[in-house]
Length: 153
Image 1: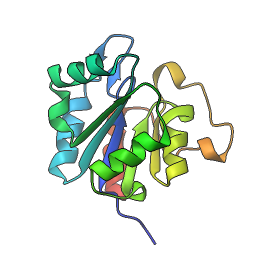
Image 2 (image 1 turned 90 degrees about the horizontal axis):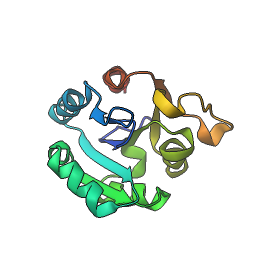
Image 3 (image 1 turned 120 degrees about the vertical axis):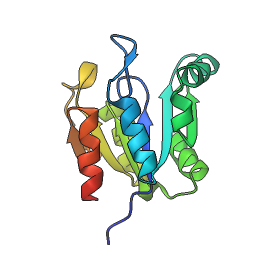
């Protein structure tokens, strides 16, 4: 049985925001708008040493306006993503988790039963999966490719 994807959950740094230039990837805001128009709920999980500052940064950049739920945390854990699913009123299996770290959001998403998309770009692009738990459901090289995956689901 195919599970319908009702929400897309993004990592912040190096997935929407290019940490090397400290600017959002050019396609980030348009992609978020498109996903909202298509009816997807949107979630954001951001790991940071200073959660109040990060939460403020997300609001000040206008990024928060695109999301139905945002979690900032010191350490990404399964509980963060389960909490986000609860905030979005969906099951983890109805989420598509997008991130740049195989050993971060991808492995966590796989463990909780979500579909995962590895944005194979930037600092962690050369860290391949070491086992099945780390294998993403899909791999993309540019954020804009996400729409193609969602169109197939």
